[in-house]
Amino acid sequence: METIGRDLREMQRVPLAASHVSALRAVGSVVDYAEGDFLSRPGEPIDRFVYVEDGEIEVVNPFTDERLLPATLGPTQFMSEIAFLSGGNWSLPMRAARDTRVLEVPRADMLRLMSQIPEMSDIVITVLSARRRRQLESRDSSLVLIGEDANRDVRRVAGFVSRNRLPFSSLALGSDEAAAIAANCGIPAEEPAVIFGRDTVITDPTPGKIARLLGLNHDFADDQEFDVLIVGGGPAGVAAGVYAGAEGLNALVIEDTAIGGQAGTSSRIENYMGFPTGISGADLVWRGEIQAMKFGTQFAMPRRVTMLEELDSGRFCATFDNGRRVSAGAVVVATGVQYRRLPIERLADFEGAGVYYAATEMEARYCRDSEVLIIGGGNSAGQAAMFLCRTAAHVRLLVRGSSLASSMSSYLSSRLEADPAITIEYGAEVTCLKGDDALEQVTIRNANDGTERSVDACALFVMVGAAPNTGWLSGLVELDDKGFVLTGDAVGGASPYCTSRPGIFAVGDVRSGSVKRVASSVGEGSVVISRVWEFLNR
Image (cartoon, rainbow, N blue to C red):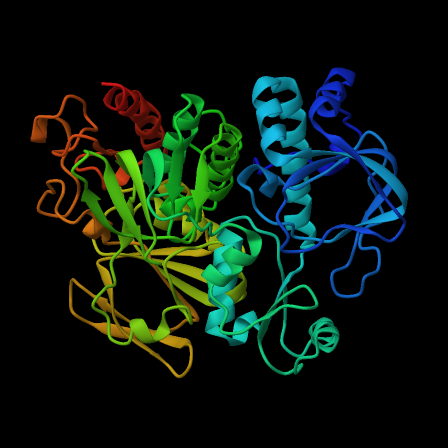
């Protein structure tokens, strides 16, 4: 299956061409570092591109100050991370292993060169993507979570960083590794914690605090202006970000949870053209995010738009959940859908402690060798069942209807039926959940005869009852009776993506009548930008 980048071992010695280095020299400056000098520390902005001319740079363990990796950076190699594209922060400290001379290029100048020299851009992005893949696989990071299994706040942070393809390590409470890290940081070894390097222990950890440390949750000046505001970071929103940047528009993508949206929770998408061996939803959209950032599109998360207003000037003003505002000449609504909270007794009590709305690697760890139940009959539920059956003792797919034919792709339903680790129960619904601090038992009702039975289970995945995220639109556009945005002929629009309000467009799952598939969302997000461009230049 495809991943987010190539194997770094293939990329260790991929030098920039002589012409690329000459371009760097024209805008950069030579800087000398003595042995032992730090070139970066965790949480500092990645504000420059560093090309090594002479010497050696090593990655440092953020808790012991010892060399972390056997491999180092030497002449003709460069020091950077993929967060350089978005203006993020360093995730690991870097130090001169001996006297070192480098060529430093300010970030803005480097991004301009990358836009002008595509061959250099290809090398840089490919290497940085491979480095991120290695970090994710080896879990090398300054961000350490202790007691993820025992604390909901830590688990919520784990979900955020995992879904956003951010490197971190998770240590079990009471393990030797956790005790060593706690001792280095001067905190109690028996308590859950979120740590960012030796000097930063996050109290009351939240995804927002972690995003700020990593440089993801940007602060914008009040009323900062953009050409287009794209609300939603799923396939449709990210595709719109790619094409907006490619057309030279000053674009901002806002996402309140994780880049990838609901599609980002799909463990394996096999029917997306161009990926014959499949790709996870998170990896697919991550590639799109990198592509959009290459063209200059900005991303901010976790950030939510709470209100949208049209100004007297015809521009739109969006208010964020932190009270800050930005303005844009046009708005693309790509907020997709979210699963409804079903009317099941004690459901809210177990959210994050046995009840989940996404099936990613993180949730799979909680289900190892246990019974798992999934509510839903669509592709997302089917993909979750195939993914979770690798680690769970058994997976039960609970379908309210009598068939999967109308709701799930044929190839997927055939696999479910053939897998001995998966049982499909038709006409089934959950009526009650039981447990103390975490889910322990689920009551299932047979809709045909009304009988009930209880099943011991550690996890229940809710993947049914999708509701559109449109409450923030403040009545500016017309919605259908289910809350989806009306577009095209239904409101007299000039294109299938025009809403009842000129300047506001809707794409993807949030649009009434849209085909709820990743490929169609990507297509809509790509095509809508031509209409946005026409509106802005009318």
